[in-house]
Length: 135
Length: 148
Image (cartoon, rainbow over the protein chains, first blue to last red):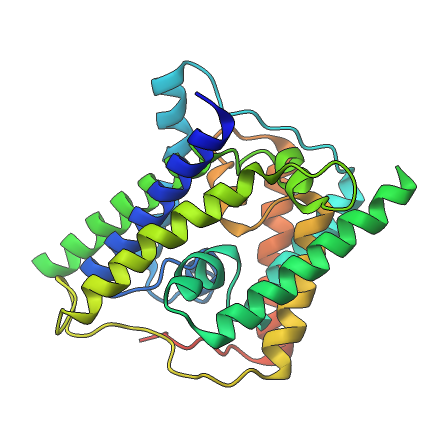
C-alpha cells in the first residue's frame, strides 16, 4: 500500500475513533487530557480502557501485517527525557495536544484549537530546523 | 458500576483500539517519520499531512452528527470545552508542547500506543511525560475542564 494511502486510511480510523468516543460517551478524544485525568485519579475506568485500547493498536497491527509498525527513534536519552517533560507539561498547560486540539478541535472549528495547532506546529518545525544544524 | 457505565468503558476501549491501530497504519508511530514531516525546510516528507486530513474529515462528519443529537448514546450530555478565550496559557503551553514534540517526534497518543512494543526509550519518554504533567499540576494547580 502506498504510504499516503495508509496515512489517509490511518487518519480516517483516528477520526472514527474520535467520533465513537464523542457520540457514545460525549467525550473529546484528547490523549493528553485522558492521561492527565488518569494521573489525577479522575474518570479512571474509561481512561484506563482507552489507554489499554490504544496500546492494543500496534498489537492488532502486528497480528494483521505480521510485524510491528516501523519505529525509528534516534534521539539520545537526555533529549528523550527533556522532550517527554516538555510534551507532558506543555500539553497540560495548553489544554491539549495533537489529538484533542488537532483532530477534534479543528473538526469543531474551535478558534482556541486552531491557535494551539498553529503554535505547536510552528515551534515543532522550528525545533527540528534548529536541531538540524547540530546533526 | 451500572450497565451504562460499563458500556462507556467498552466504548472507550473500542475507541482507543481503533485510534491505536489507526496510528500504527498511518506511520505516526515512527518518530523519524514525524520529524521528517516537521522538517519543511530540508527534506520534507508531506505524507503525514494525509493523517491529519483524514482524521479531521471523519471527525468533522461526527461533529455534524453530534449537532443533530440531543445527547450522546451513553451519557446525559456532551462534555465539550466551553471556553473560547485564546489566552497566554494556551499559547505558551502549546509552544512548549511543540518543542518537545519536535525534539523527539513523539506526542502523547503515539507514545502511549508504543508502550506495547515496549522499547526502553519509549518507556522513558512516557515516564518523563507523566512527570511533566504532574509537575504542571503541582506548579499551576490542576485545571482540567472536564473533571466531572
